[in-house]
Amino acid sequence: MNETLEIQNPSLIQDLILSGKDFKKEFTKVEDVPYFDCSYQRFLGKYIAEDDTVLIIYAEGIRYQEKLIHPEFIEDKLIFKLGTKKYTIEEIDYILKVENLKQYFPIATNFFGKPIRFVHAVDGVSFKLEKGKTIGVVGESGCGKTTLGRTILKLYKKTAGDIFFEGKDVSQVKGKNLRKLRCDMQLIFQDPYSSLSPKMTIGAIISEAVRAHHIVPKEDVREYTFQIMEKCGLQRHYYDRYPHEFSGGQRQRICIARALAVKPKLVVCDEPVSALDVSIQAQIINLLKKLQKESNLTYIFISHDLSVVKYISDTIAVMYLGSLVEIGSKKDIFATPLHPYTEALFSAVPIPDPTVKMKRIILEGDLPSPANPPKGCKFHTRCSRCMEICKEKTPQLKQMDDGHYVACHLYQEQVDETKEEKDNL
Ligand code: SF4
Image (cartoon, rainbow, N blue to C red; front, side):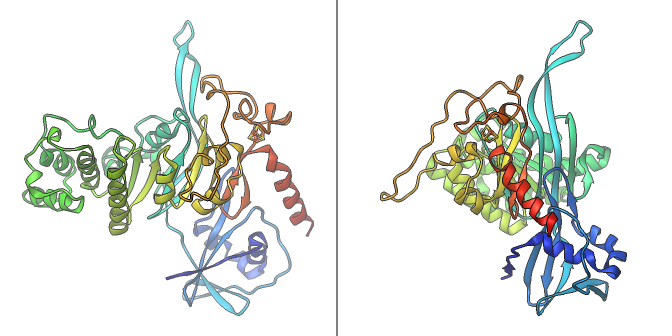
């Protein structure tokens, strides 16, 4: 197992890397590494030492200092020393990058039929997702979670922003490549009752896309379908049965088998267990985890059940009225939720310890209309810590900790002060 090294001052490390003159000449090679720069994050790369130690570097700014380290290329690998250790660069495999994604739906038109009013279902969302990992998207009903998932899958035509899947701009994918993309990105629906055709047998449901996309030769389709069914905990003799003969949990297994049959890389799980009994929920979640491990699948897991999200996710993104208000690792979000909305949301998660007294934060008021979102911070109409600035200025996502971002004016000053201190160094 890899050991992860924690870096206390990541931006300093970046300064050191960028400072070497020879290295500067070679810097374009570093940009080939997953260099990611968008409104909320700047990421430099992942470094792996010879002893398998992993070093991950995030940074907020680029400045040049005295040359302090001596990176060099050995056999086409960039090597640099940090303390007594040697590091080489290895690319982080980001399967999905979403940048400033917007999805507006027109709700009123003018005399000439031109849309004049819109529902801001997704409003400037950015995040990136590492291959084989799970991002949990949480928030109240109507916050835009499902629309986000469907826009990423290209089921809706995005209003603005970019979606990169395996480095390719999804909006540019057409024809044969779009068919391939449809296989690579799959969706598991919330309702296993209405998402299966009652007129088709289980075998026909699972094998339909296998035939259409020529996943395996025609003569092997039946055997391949059996294999997928078994992988998802369905017995072979279910092949000729119909969906109405099955329970909710089994139907959801059929939906999962249908999605996996086309060998996807990314699966959007849209509330996959909310329509199921609690006892069945655990089985389905465990099945999803098992399949992820076996096939290195990447999940976008949309749910309002925070306990389920906690169990399955690596990263958690909190949405409110179409925007991300906080994003970070599962550990950070559960241990130290920063945004007042996240605090309220997570205060409702039951703690399985009778000695711990829960402090539930009850939010007042309803979710404002996404057709007419409040000015400034969208949460200010319900926030108990609202300040004057919150009513005027929209807070931007700012990094508080490695990979932990929050959009709230309560922390804005703190972030600005830290930045100023670094600039003065
Ligand atoms: Fe509350 Fe202001 Fe933070 Fe919005 S920006 S969550 S209103 S404190």
